[in-house]
Image 1 (cartoon, rainbow, N blue to C red):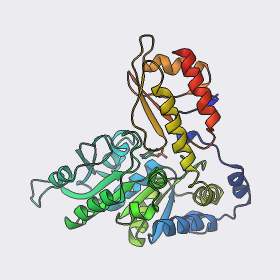
Image 2: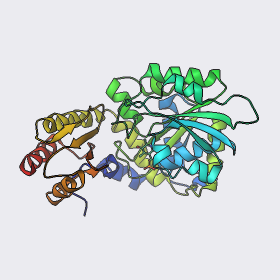
Image 3: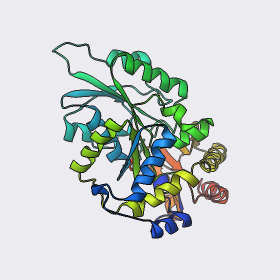
Image 4: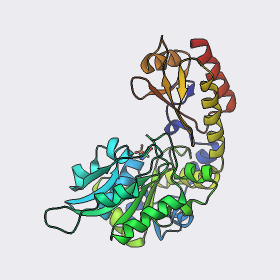
Length: 342
Ligand SMILES: *Cc1c(COP(=O)(O)O)cnc(C)c1O
């Protein structure tokens, strides 16, 4: 049984009633034959929202990043990414395992950025001693960097740097709509200069399954081949794509509520003894546990016993994520439970 107030992740969101209805009614066909009209609709909608030529419905954010790296890079080539990036830490480095693609790691700054000088220094010169650098991968919002967002100006600067050196830019935009809503900008301002973007339908946007990759027609054609070899060719996938269409049309603007609730949670935690919240940017709240009676693990356990789910991600660090289904009243109740425990 999941906790009653589940702040472990925004992946726990349940499909909305409108999604359930759209799923039941969806027109479907064999998508490996290119015959699922609902998948086509979702891919075209995603491409138009991002101002790209084409889209590809994939099973997960992990698969979206993997097909993107495989479509951009040949074996033996390198991708520059941050040491704290999701792709480096939480995706079994599939591009290396399955594609012979090596990560070249540069340090993430606390705000999720990579310094331009560090990126530039990580690009290998054209010399037979070195692997060929092919790609830069950014993450927006940045999961391990407290849900921090990258700005349009920063993204443009990295894209310019990449293109000046003949590299491509991929954005792991699992939560790119959180980044857009938090800055009150169109998502294209955050992705227009990138060569490919992956974003998740199944996190804050509340769809049950799936992510989408967008990019040029040629890139998406290569990514589609990679999806198939990974076993990601789905048949009557319109049943789940239908929920993704609702995610994109009805669930983006409300992310602002999640950001307000995250702030409310952090503000409340800051008033409690032995709890030190870190800065909050979007829907992710990290806090340190510096309490005589609790470690992160034992506080997680005590909260769980009272129906509140959080994730201990280190000996003294906990993460809580707000999302659809978490109301302001849940935040207040959570703070009451914290107060009682501490
Ligand atoms: C969740 C996440 C992913 C992977 O998505 P899954 O659908 O869980 O595979 C990739 N990147 C970031 C930044 C994420 O937060």
